[in-house]
Structure formats: C-alpha cells, structure tokens
Image (cartoon, rainbow over all chains, first blue to last red; front, side, top):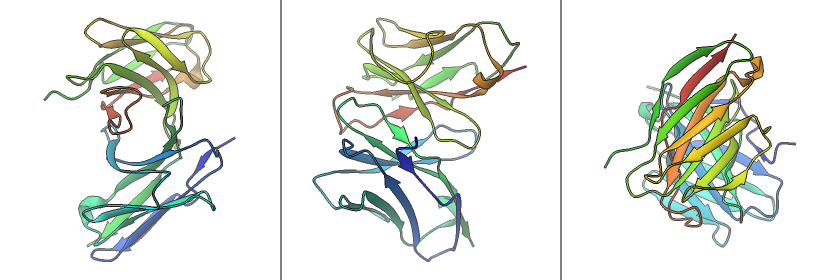
Length: 111
Length: 115
C-alpha cells in the first residue's frame, strides 16, 4: 500500500518555463512534507519542506504548495534550468519521524 | 563540515552470505537512519538509531540489523542474503530525530548486488 504517490514517472520541460511536480498522499497522520532531489550516483539532497500548518513555502526558484483537504502537494520550479534535471522524490513524515517516499519523478529540462 | 560518508560504494555478494555496510554521520548529528532503494522505487525506511539505541523500524525482517557507535557512526548488517536484497542502501543523518528543522542528509549509498 503506497502511502505517498508520484503518479507521473517523468516530466520534460523547456528551459525557462515552469516545472510542476505533483505528489499525493493517503495517510492523514502525515504532518510534514519534503522534496528531495537525486542525481545519478549521489544520495538524495534535501530541497524544500512544508509543515501541515502551512499551505505554501517558497525558497528562491522553488515553491511547495500543500492542499490538505485533497492530500496533495506540488513542487513548482520557476524558471527551470538544465541543472534541475534529476529525479525528484516527495516524502512525508509524522510523529514517528521516519520518512515515507514516493517512487520519484524524473525531470528533464531541455536547453 | 564533513557530510555523510558510506562504505563501500559497491559490493557483490552471493545468496546466503552476510554483509556489513558502514556509515559515518555528518558532524553534529546524533541520529542515523538507513533506507533501501530498489530499482525504480523510492527509498524505504529500514530503521533509525538515536544515541546508540534503535528508535523505530520499518517492515524489514530481523536478518536486517544495525548498530550505532558512541561517535554516532553506524553499521547495517544483513544476514542470509537473498536476491531481492539487491538494492542501493542509503544512510542518512540528522541533528535530532524530533527536529523538523533538521532534514535528513544522505550519503551516496552502497550499491549491493546479490547473485
């Protein structure tokens, strides 16, 4: 039973345009959500997070939106750059502090 | 500031053997978590250690065991290896398991292949 779902395996966008990566979750006990980026042969790198008491968090080109009623979050990257090409994982956690990850989405930013 | 380091980077073992993977946590971090990432999947939580004690475990059998040492480095041991254990094993450290402002910092992983 997948509690964190990233239903699109890949996304391709043009450099300079917006990338929107989506994530859905099923567990109502999750109260903190994170996005990680992973390049080949490297470990995941923390990108941005959001608490369940907020609906938006912004850090430079990256913004995460949380819709608790829909159990949906999204990561917006604008403008997208070729260096953003990587696998992006959505993750969620609750009181037990363990992270539950989605399967990831491969983002390709075309020059 | 030294990040999370894992050794070895790659390992090939035979079914039934035992393996030990090692992890040095980032300076100032007292919590270490281990994750298994199978091909095409997201990382799956194995267990977490906080100040040398196990502090949570995922759905992995007892043949997956671990240790955390006084310097907060950690080991993951897997006994009686099975073909399905082939995966990337990721170690992550954080300042405190309860601190949401301290996200996990991952190492580059150990790629284990079981033949």
